[in-house]
Length: 309
Image: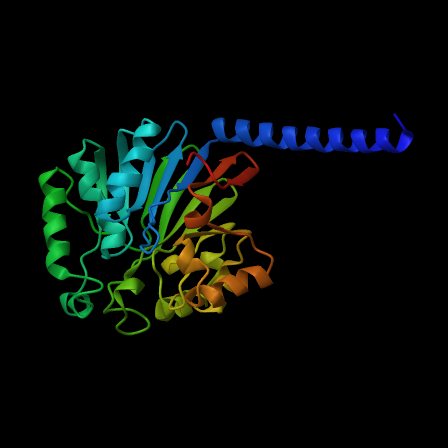
């Protein structure tokens, strides 16, 4: 073997060892994590939706949004069953659009135990203005009654509420506007979205539902409240979402986008794609990379795409 060839083999072996060590490290971090947030892929090719499972070791299990009715059957419930999730302590429905609340009824009907549900009732006039493509007040009332029949009548979410989830871990509702009485006047249903911060030690993860331009621009004025390590990008990364000033105020290290590939790669998401690319912030899209996990333990955080697909 020539000296040149020997150097090449050594370099290849060294790289393989590095890759092996990284993979092993990621594996053990996940299985020893204190907090695991999974952005579950509940998208179909031309249908976006949100569902985020947060599991705290020696603590609670949280679900933020539950996707559509059909994807709860085909994607969300199968994921929960694969991971032996039989009980969810708290469900937060960020706002009354069916791609966020539709799947919860299916989970209840299939014996997933739910401890509490937080789901704010919209203003009827603002809601029904979106028929047939968006909010539907009659459907919202129907599902609220269904939740009540399963023993989990929806509770009201309010800004300032804090939830102790486990060791060194808590959730805080930063904003919870009703679409009528807001600092930006009347807004869309999307701007009813709960803005929530998950805290684990020094890490912060911001959840934004389908936050829109008006409240997004308002929230951008308060970076001290919304700055975070990880941002759940609002409104599936589509154009009508928050202004760039919001992204700047959050200043995340990572962005997670619940979006079908066809939407994320379309002109409707061009501004958002460009902003994250320009600022060197990795954007993980579950319609492309499947279920995406954020695992946290101590001072370590790892984002893992293609997790258990």
